[in-house]
Amino acid sequence: MKRLSLQWRITLLTILLLAAACVTMKTLLCSSGHAYMDSIGNYVMHYAEEGPLAIRVDIPEEQWKDMSERFSGEFVVELTGAKHSFCMRGWYIALAVTVLGGAVAYFVSGRALKPLKRFTAKAERVQLQSLTEITLSEDEAVEFSRLSRAVNQMLLRLKQAFDAQQQFVGNAAHELRTPLALMQARLDLYMSTDHGDSCPETAETIAMMREQTERLSRMVRTLLDMSELKAVPRNDRIQLAPMIEEVLADLSPLAEKSGVTLSQSGEDLWITGSDVLVYRAIFNLVENGVKYNRPGGSVSAAVSRRGEKAMIEIKDTGCGIPEDFRESVFQPFFRVDKSRSREKGGVGLGLSLVWEIAHLHGGGVRVTESSKTGTVIELTLPVSAAAETGINGRCG
Image (cartoon, rainbow, N blue to C red):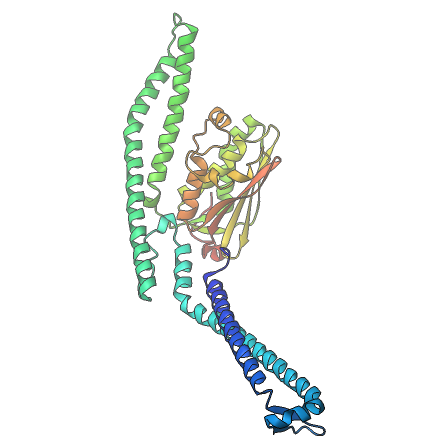
């Protein structure tokens, strides 16, 4: 019952009520009709030997005994047939009224619930990046108007809360960046000088501190990038093929070190957005595929067009992502294998940043395939009008 729409629930409830009412009325009418037929059975009989016409004769009570033997059979048959015909006709009428009432209830409830359908369609378009850009109409029936007003106010409060959270993250990252830079500089200076009298434990501790400081610095840089995404202009004309070629060239040293081959294929499409952010999104996806790949594996980037969307598929031959985690991997600080992520220097923000960039450009990102033999992540971005003209774009 929970899977049925509200319109069908109202329709079924109406049918049940109509059916109950019709059955009740039918039962009462049948019992009353049978009672009346039985009451007149002692005075009226039906006699029809030929033709469709029937003759009903009133028989005085004192003469009934003499004639009962002659007409009793015909009378009983006729009276029984009349009862049966009366009952069946009543059931047909009850069924017709129930079906007709159900159909009327379905269409009437559909018209009555149209504001709710419009409400649902608008609510589904609300995204984290556009909490207050889409407002629900309050010019509806009283119940829907109050609901729309409450949801609009809730979206406004959510927007204010997210803005405050984002501001806090940005401020915290700014405050952490300076002391981390100083710590890293001092550690680099220490490592660059000779300390022959230091024990191995000290050198190991310094190396660990340097590694963790670098990791914290990467996290702070990513948090700063995420807090400043909306302030970045998104009106560049971007040619995807040269950009992907540049990403693969920048990651080729890491790929060679890991024993992973890089390749690209597909169409050469244009999009409109932030040159820096789109590059960062593709870079993070390819880098992620290289880091968590097998020795001798591969990472490929393919571009295709689907309607008004540019589809960038990043395919690797890594160990895959469990099905339960295919959506969670885009959450901040989420890592499938925490120990391996730390070993690779990951902080759990790379794919989250990709998700933010994709949705900021009106696109999306999702894991389309994943198994023990590899993963396919699809980045979707709107195609620019420059796809047809090919002017004023980045060409590498």
